[in-house]
Amino acid sequence: MTIHMNLIDGEWVGDNLIPNINPSDTGDIVSEFTRATVAQAQAASEAALRAFPLWSHSSFVERHGILSQAASEIIARKEEIARLLSREQGKTLAEANAETVRTAQIFDYYAGEAMRLAGEVLPSPRPGVMIQVTREPVGVIGVITPWSFPLAIPAWKIAPALCYGNTVVFKPAELTPGSAWTLVDILHRAGLPHGVLNLIIGEGMVVGQAMIDHPDIHALTFAGSESIAERVAAASVRHGRKYKLAVGAKNPLVILDDADLDAAVGCAIESAFFSAGQCGTASSRLIVTENIHDRFVTAMAERLETLQVGHALDEATKIGPVVDEMQLNQSERYIAIGQEDGANLVCGGNRVSRETPGFYLQPALFTECSNAMRIARKEIFGPVAAVIRVRDYEEALAIANENTFNISAGICTTDISHANHFRRNAEAAMVMVNLPTAGADFHASFGARRESSVGPREQSRNAAEFYTRVKTAYTAI
Image (cartoon, rainbow, N blue to C red; front, side):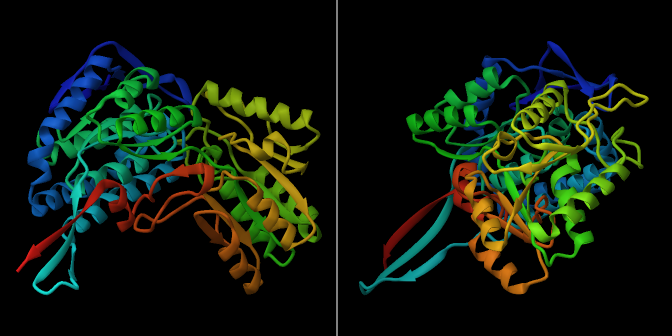
């Protein structure tokens, strides 16, 4: 049995073993992991603080080499790593492979960014004065990530943090410790000095809270629930630290009368139900104009009947299990709420039995929904979608923008004027035209707006806004 331990100041430590259960087969123990203590979380922060002076002045060549080597190893081991991800999280092997490759691409991108660190030289209105604007690392970065993308989300936070010369304390979700451990182990063996990257696996209320409260964490990036995000924000204001929050979404996908029906159905199914709907950019509000509504719903129901729900490692599976019993119960609770509120359950919504015991749920599709219903307002984070009928494009746009939790918004249309208008006026950080709302490329800016997010964007060169501080120097020549 593989044991995934905590990494503190270059040493693997821990006891108190906890089983890591496969949601596709609850009888399969993927690994065991050690749960960190408050004292270990504090020790990790102190180790990162001690390591910061040396790492912050390390050569860009050293940083490039470590990040590049990590990217190469992830690609070389992608089948093995993807299989582990599927076993512990439940997304299909195809989805896990895509996430693994994207993780490697993120590290490769920031390996390149380490070679492109630059500043500005500006003229001064004062004769004989030179102005230099440079970026410097912030210090110790706390990274707290969810289980939905246990490789990619940590990668797009850890890679820029290291690229710009910061040290890191990383707390992954307990449901996916193996993916986090593998990522840290690869970076550790790539040559990171002791204390630069520290891994603490444990309960959010224990080690997560210890990180939030520690005064020597200079910036904290968090993705997860609203209640924890509020604590992160309050503690960060108290400590005067930078913070970045990502707290969920209820993304819209608009389908207009002129849309290609087959393409629109494909976009809707991938947006709402792939990864079992457990994706921050998933679209669980399908806003459909009335002349295509009935045909769209019929085609959706027919397509959903053909999608196999099953074991994540089965190549025939299109939708894997949800991540655990709690998540399954939450989805079922919202399916009941939808029916109580008057929505029509067209298909799905039942638990599914397979050869292996797991957390399987048929994708649920509701019609006769309004934007006021709880299933259209609350993030369910499961394979549940609400279809909202509207008169025309103008009403569709208004409904899409009414919810304040939008990361990604999509539209399916063959009318370029509507596509361009939606792209400009959708209240979302990302807009998809005739594409699923779920999905983003590794080198492009990623983030959210309004109540879904606080702080600068992730990925691309925008990451420098969070992981560096700007210094302006004036020199008399």
